Length: 395
Ligand code: SAH
Image (cartoon, rainbow, N blue to C red; front, side, top):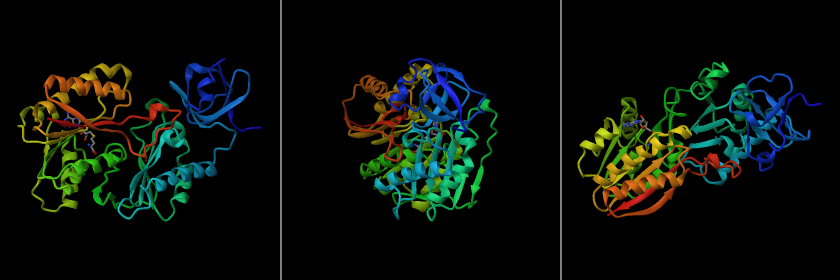
């Protein structure tokens, strides 16, 4: 007898599970045995009473996040096996186990068959984030498994889920160390240093997902005048400086972000006069600036977090990119991104296309960018694809 409570689906609602999609929506459920707690593991049965999946239960539109399509115990060995598999992928693609790079995403939710869990590695510290009640409930067991799998690699595990868990679930997560407690917060990405503010910073403290796109920008920076708009911790800026940019201007509306950017530039290029950071609104800056930049990065926050916000978001991307097309120097290169999951690649490309047409400039697409290999997309869960970027040559 299994110790897990059972959930029965309505007839036909098992179809997406047969194709390994990891979510079960509340509307697909016919009945629930007992009253599972928020985050409890439940077994899922079809209307014909055969077992089909095992997952974390949660009250909300996504009612179950699937952990496994076979019967098994969800225990420390289970977490160990999944974490080990995730670590193997990072080693295999050359992001982990390198002397010049100790920053990578170890677990990317559904992409690593661990829906609701994100773990980023910054040198000797893992920052762990739960996006589901289930991962929150199991956090200690996961942390123990993580410490075992990453023994000798990490010493600290910081849990940061105060802003990522559903408010209504009454989970009252507290941010803090589950293991270790070092305040050493300098990490390295492709040989460049940066400070991670896992205590107060956005996401887990750094935007790990732009790592390869930053490296590409470095290649295009030589002799250019660079504007890094929405700089946050200045990632694109310090790559541009290493690439030989003539000047680099970083802009973010948050004074704290500008402060972090300055610190990170100082860490890598102490006293280098090529860099200046401005705490200013993007649109205001773009309006008042001249035509001096020939490499512009636009990496704004997600303009749309829900499907109903798509129209407005597209207008936002159009306006923002139109400003860049209007001002960029002839022969300039524009790196433009959208990290909204609900904005598709086609949506985004159409918005940028419209902005280009409005400016009347000739524009070529040089690269179409996405998230790196440590943010893998589970082929059965296309929703996991979120980062889109275009690198454009503007005549
Ligand atoms: N490019 C960054 C990540 C950008 S995150 C990196 O590689 O790490 C988005 C940033 O946009 C945040 O730091 C936020 O403070 C900033 N931001 C949000 N609204 C803004 C606005 N209207 N003008 C300027 N910056 C803004």
